[in-house]
Length: 364
Ligand SMILES: Nc1ncnc2c1ncn2[C@@H]1O[C@H](COP(=O)(O)OP(=O)(O)O)[C@@H](O)[C@H]1O
Ligand SMILES: O=P([O-])([O-])O[C@@H]1[C@@H](O)[C@H](O)[C@@H](O)[C@H](O)[C@@H]1O
Image (cartoon, rainbow, N blue to C red; front, side, top):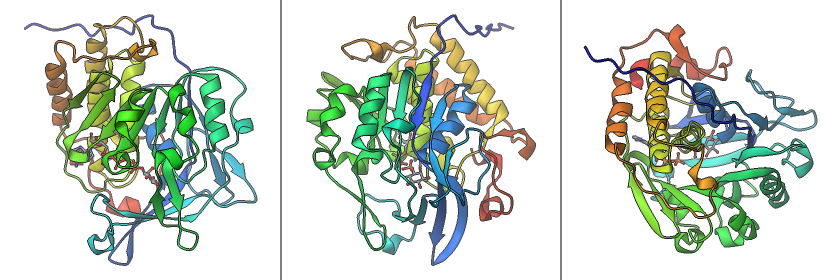
């Protein structure tokens, strides 16, 4: 039998990472009833994927006195404020816009994250991943000053909230107050719905734009080219956090030395794993080990941690890209695990509806 030795981690420098965005409480509603209550916020989904991929990070996040979930990376607790809360309505009839999979309402809002809340040190990369309008233009400006490379989720920039009900609306990126900072951002991630609120042709002149397309995977646009990245199959039970987990997997792949097209596959994989569960996903430990082994094998092709660190960005699918997709897809074929063998960075709160609703791990 031919066996392939799994390469040991190489001597690439350890990256320091900064994640900026508030944790929140998510309430999922259908047919007028609450079906689940979970920890939410892009920061929680990305932390979850980073922990799964053994990527260490610093997190700047604010919550209120009522924050109810135990987490591994402590947020700043604001004693005079409540935690940001989103209600997500999944009823078909409620959807006013054909591009939306849910209607979101921000029903409580915590304080914004100010530049002075960020650590007083430099980072190899930073991620601006707000959900409730907590990232201010001056905060993103400070991030581009202290981080060598900045990844931005457009939802942190273009959300506006109805004064009465808190319904999330999107505004054009040009009108957002962040537009002038885009030339200093390296990657901008948007869902296909959000991408309608920017001029991709213009923005791709400055930074790499990654547009996610749900079950159809994603597309990467840069100044002189674009490419589609294949998806992975999933039984979708809840789309919440797919885009966040995608971003966690994509950046985690880059940190482990993958080139952009291969890292985007890792993003698609974690997006597909997330929709198979309600709320924050719990990953099967055997599946995770296989994913990490495949990533280790794959990174041997590369010499630097992040090709996008170069001034000009241009990407091609390296040899073996399709085989890498197939090997990642095969990681989903691991036998069903017991609940004790699943990993999640952030423990669930006791007694949440989510525990009742949670499908077994083989939902992955
Ligand atoms: N039903 C699905 N089946 C497989 N993969 C999915 C599915 N939905 C989402 N994904 C993965 O998650 C990524 C992000 O999902 P998407 O729905 O585009 O973002 P968002 O959650 O921000 O709306 C997609 O690019 C894809 O890789
Ligand atoms: O589903 P997705 O767009 O990736 O990200 C979601 C946000 O849009 C939402 O505001 C938040 O409450 C969820 O916890 C999650 O972060």
